[in-house]
Image (tube, rainbow, N blue to C red):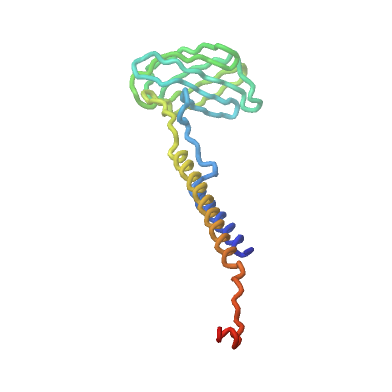
Length: 203
């Protein structure tokens, strides 16, 4: 009986392992702009500054508003009062106006003429410090990815139902085998093996 129980336990564990075999619990590489994001972002570092540029979807030939975050590389503290000059290597004729909104947060206003990738050459002057940073990969004309239910969710739900079905099936099988073994172990009705007496034969 114990061997049967161990066998059933092994079947249950094997079924559960197969049901979860397709899941990936590791941390894979993340996309630069994940599905469901509300803005694009581009970052750059130098020996003195950290720069983050955020912007909502842009269209060529339309006014563009971008947010630029400037902070100290060593302390991560926002840098206020910096003089920022932006130029585009793709088109030197483009003009941009930079206005500080909050300490370390600057509004960049201008216009991209076409739907294609652009970059900013950012010249930073903050007090006695100065540096030049390149911000690449500004995607004009690109739409934000739409968040969708991953197919893995449906597959995981199906696997869960498979696991439950396997457990129920194995449980039912165990009950059936147990009942069968109990029936086989019931003692048989006693059968008389004595030889009939002569009186019984004459009767």
